[in-house]
Image 1 (tube, rainbow, N blue to C red):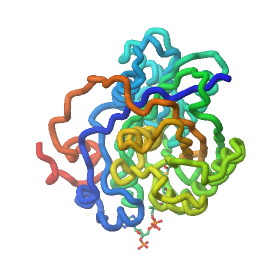
Image 2: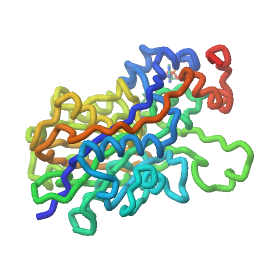
Image 3: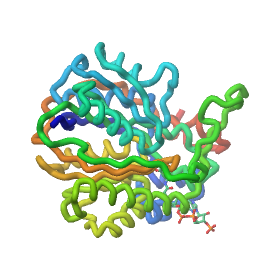
Length: 363
Ligand code: ACO
């Protein structure tokens, strides 16, 4: 039997932080309100593009797998915020890596994009059409934060995570999965005008998240619970058989509600939302990298993952880890730091969304 084992992993968390206290200088909110409602303390904001963050995470994943870019047959980028649609951003990453033999495509199913991409690439490896793939989730979602909407601007952060999957005889990788999309739930989470509509012809494209938080909460818990039940049944497993749960990091209360429904102790759940907020397609690979760095993943472990995103798309999977939890190599790929503060970085965004933050700027 042919499997698609995860053999490399890498992440990029941009250096600039926007803490809850920083945010309270821009909108009427507080660290206490944000943390108690969401579990978020801070988020990283990026000075480089989605494609460049993805490239840095991919370089690390390749080094961890001990591979060269030319060993890769496929590069898939999961993202809602690629800076380029045509040509796709995966081909940009491919050129940055110097990969010459790979196919390259982007997938967008919002926050579930990385998991959908892992499904597609795993199926291609298992079917025998490719041997090795880079599966990346990367988002620069800070650019879409509407500072007039205190109910949603605190929820998101930027970052990237990547894995290498390789054909293997060993039972490992994504063993069972369910991907779905809840009917009639498209309107509760949207970025209107983020696409090719007549409004792109106007001077001032105004992208702003439309958002029904409580509706999303209910649909997310139901959608992920159903997907988890499906994958556990497919593998003939119960929640007790799962060693670690790595859910999409949208809100700590969603994660806790899900864990409670599954009767799953929080000690077995990877929580990274306090550090990164919701990084959309990057959230699961970022949390996976953190779990590896913290020594929480051991060879042969059964890992459950679950995710949801605008659409509302949903998914869950059972990943069996292989034999290696240490990277084979370390990449020295890097970019220059941003010279300024997080407020300087967001200066144009504050102006665009009508917030007077001049007093916060250092230049
Ligand atoms: N600071 C202070 N007060 C605020 C803020 C803020 N940032 N935002 C809203 N409030 C106020 C509201 O005005 C409201 O005040 P009122 O009662 O006087 O009218 C009050 O707080 C409650 O507002 P709600 O929107 O009802 O707050 P809720 O408890 O539902 O929490 C939250 C909001 C955290 C967004 C919640 O709905 C949620 O967890 N949603 C699901 C997670 C989610 O949607 N994540 C987004 C990503 S989706 C994805 O990953 C695909």
